[in-house]
Length: 360
Image (tube, rainbow, N blue to C red; front, side, top):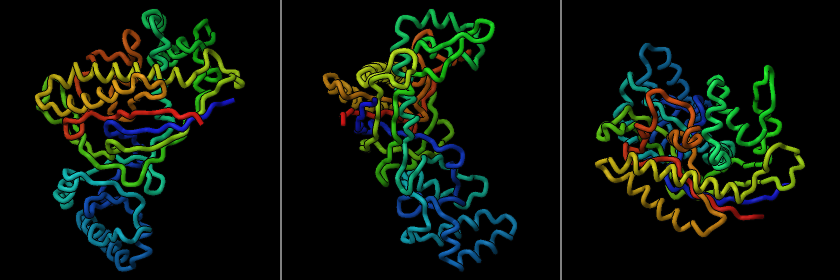
């Protein structure tokens, strides 16, 4: 039997959960008009505008036609013809200016990394949310055993270390060949946790510039990445079901909502505040620290609410929020880790969401 919950969510920082390479688009796939990026349905444009189709074919046959094709798409696109675009996202001022500047530059593709969409609604996959919970719960359950588990997996292959460590924490490792343990996926207690995809409101995303900033040189600006992010203070819901009677006969200790709330609250609060102390406090521009300060106030207001927590997910969440803490942190980077941050406009962190559980 499962206990069902509706989870209400609010983005405290911008969130980007990528849709893979197929969602990396360039100006032959989109255009920008009146403050929005429009992902174009080229087939529909050909069908609804025969003159555009003829012009496109004609230009395609000429050498070095990329710039003319971009301009043709931009000039011919009509946002009022709803069938001609798949989804849209608000374009930040920085992105719109960059688009205008680079439209005639054949050497710059101006690729945008977009999210998954259902129609014009952005999606955060339930698997991404579940992954954030998994990280926090594993860290909490490992407790004081991190060092012993770290020693146990020391001689395991790089590929197997993470799964074997997870299996030890969850109590679902089984003996394999030559006495080596391996993770028994059929016994994974996370099979007792089901999370739906989160369908976000229309026009709740924005194309922004993300730059990698070095701790050693906070004034430096890395190569810009143009990404679609869910805007701050966006509200949405998703469904969560938690097994309560272990009829699936999974191994280890079954997962409860109470444990999810407690473990994720402690884990992501600590990771975020440590990040602020180590990185953002050293930055000359205090924008990041201001953002974390706002979240800190929000977190303190949640302390008495046993149904509320925060998670960090998506790309740009950084290693500290994506694996075990302490001695069991993986992967082990020889050159160290945590010396750069990916920030919106080089200033604002990403990936934090507030959640509140409401039992159905």
